Image (tube, rainbow, N blue to C red):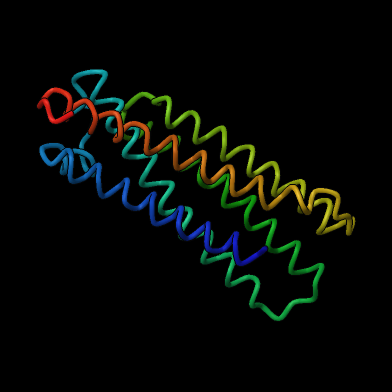
Length: 184
């Protein structure tokens, strides 16, 4: 079952990476602004939504790849079982806090409003962080496997929901542009 979760995680990371690439490709005229633009480049609500979705997608990709690599590294450390559980879940909780903080700061620095995608991804990240914290307490300190069989599917569903939310905006923009061109 763990192999399924590992493969699913990498597939989701790859799809999220393609969302970032698609945003960069589809909005060529905003490519520089997406990375380095400030408040002056945000002229309409559509600009706010584009920048917010891009920042959210980029943060999701960076944090999914880094937290996945970090979790894999922690599992190879020569620690006893309880120490490894404590370090593993504590690291995932800290990564969740860092992700939400970075997402918020990116929006504040850029000066753009939070889109539906950014808010939803932050809420899902908070729920996943809470689940990791619960596992830290239950498995890391109390040796209780009460949530063990619920944990894996919950995290996978959270990652799938995150992907769907960040893919929604580019998908709608693609369909909108194809409709206006008469391709559909």
